[in-house]
Each structure stands twice: as C-alpha cells, then as structure tokens.
Image (cartoon, rainbow, N blue to C red):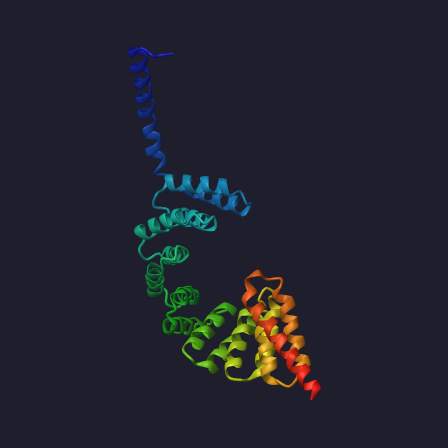
Length: 302
C-alpha cells in the first residue's frame, strides 16, 4: 500500500522523536565504567564456558559502556584471532595501541597478526617495539625469531633466540629454529647442539632428528645419520624422505652389504608407494634396486 505524504511525515517525526529520546540513554551508557567491568566479567565467564557469541556481545557492550577500558578490546581481538578473522583482530589491537602506545600486549598481538598475514616487516616492527618496552620477556624474542625464520634472516634469528634462552625461555621449537639458523650459517657443531637440546624438550620431534641426519650425512658420519633418519621416521611416518635418506646412509656405510641394502631400499619403496608426492624418489629407488640385484647376480656368477 502506498503511504500518503502525511503518513510519511508522521513516520519520520516518530522516528526522530524516538532517536532523540534514545540519545540521553546512549550518552549515559557510554560513561558507566562499573557497568563496563560487569559486562567484561560476563564476557570472561561466557568465553570460559565456550559461549563465544555471548562473550563477543559482552565485550562489545563493555566497550560501548567505557571506550577507554582496554581489556575488552584485547579479549575480543584474541577471539577474532582464534577465529582467523585477522583483519578484525588487528583492528582491535591497533585501537588499544592507539589509546595506550606503551601497551606491550597490544604490540605483541599486532606482531602475531602481522605474522599470520605474512606482513613480516610490520611484525618485526611490532615485536621490536614490544621488546623495547619489556626486554626481559623471553617469549617476545621467540615470536620475533619466528618472523626472522620466515624471512630467512638467520643471523637475526640466532641473536633473538640467544636472548630468549639467556632469559630462561625456550622450548623444542625455539631450539629447533636455532639449530636451523646455525645450520644455514654452516656452524654445524652448534647446530647439532641446538637440535639435541630441542630433543630434550620433545624427544619425538621429527624435524630435529631429520636435520641432524642431514648434517651427519654431509659429514659422512653414516651410522649417526642412519640413526637420526630412522628416529625421524619413527616420530612421523609421513616423513617418507627420512627412510630414503636412511637407505642412502646405510648403503654408504657398507656398500658391500648388498642384501641388506636391497632390503633397506625395498622397505623405502613400500613406504613411498603410500605417498603420491614421493613418486620421483620412488622411481629412483626402484631403478637402484634393479641395479643392486643385477650387481648381486654378477657377483654370484663369478
């Protein structure tokens, strides 16, 4: 039904009166710090109970009640981060940083979001700003090192992780990254030490076992290489390349043990057939087994 001009005017006036009447309530609500804390606490409870939608609503309400209350921004940003809504998370953390430039949590979280968005320059800037405010926080150095690892800036990575470990921080991942940094700079003894330290924290860290195997293989320490590669595969049976390298190490250790070498390569072939991405290595292994069997046959005829 088409409305008359009078009806349209009446609707507009009614809406204006409603909005004018609501304005004092909004203004009053935006200056209620106690109510803001109450809503924030309700958000914490909802989040702990797994009611994320209610938590989001409570945090937003708290922000409206007191825009200068920063905790709801941080918590809401953390939820967005967990939901992989990185742009929304960044918006929350930047608002906190604008209101409080010395807020370490906000800067660190800006760094984390930037890292996820592969904005590594921005991530480094944020983490360094956070460290400038809190240079005894070991975790910040670890976060910074992750960025340097992605940037392949190994000297900077080593420096960051050495600071982290000096402060008593670190875990299997930090020592693995440190080992890779040393490895890339050809500081192989230090790399092995870092990988071994990583394994003290997590003995089934396949990556550290594999990395040590690579170093030992290059040093022609074939027995140690074979042990490391076998441990890497045991820790992660998706790492088929570990058994490929294991077969190489075993054969390099004793080229005349033809039967054992054939067995090791055939073991790898069975593994590789389960992994479509291993087709290139599989073909090489199959050809090599054929060559070993031909060699064995010739030796038996002599």
